[in-house]
Length: 315
Image (cartoon, rainbow, N blue to C red; front, side, top):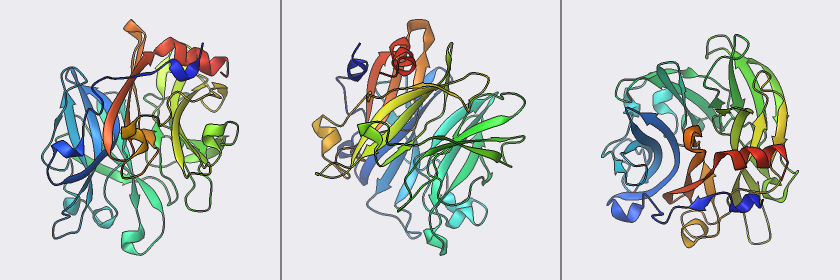
């Protein structure tokens, strides 16, 4: 099995293209979830006009009956000015990771603190049941954390989270932590550093874990820096079901590399970037929505069991 051939790009790519939406500069880094029988995405958006508040970055909701043809909301998911301080003054809400726990959806956004005179991104958690009434839970990490991703259920009586500390000169890595209440986090442990494969020599980061029969499947992004600049890739690892701090296997190949024009040329060249994926075990499929060149939203579909096998065999 060639792991680089597991995922096939959808022929309708890009599914969401800024050229189709006047006033929008880029659409990228979608986080997928299922709601009321629909496939939904939280999509990162940059606009040409930031308005009087100068907010050029925001998240919008996209919904679809078939997972291919999406309707993009006209307005931001959250009116950031209405949030409690200091969240209302942080950087724009983008690059979310969505996880459903029980009847609640939680999503975490890495929001900049530069806007209030500090440095780095902190993770802000939100929760909702319908993506209409949304509550800001709290700031749940210190700055320097760009990819916090929740597990969808308690393990051993605790909530668990994958983190992506590392900004600037510090290489991005994956850590794991746990919490009794989703707000107070501790028991921080290193989990995975890059450098074990060519696609993650510079940094590596997680998305929300997906429960499969063999454990927890985690879609990863990785960054390499060859002579022509930075390249982002997508790959995966598998964690133990009862002890998520134990890695059962990780891919040495990538699942997806920037190859198509819409991935190699855009706001940021040579980028394929995931913020989550959807698993359909009943038909053994993985639907991976991703941002391409920080410009548009795309989809690749593959066999779920083959991704798990590639992790276990360290292909």
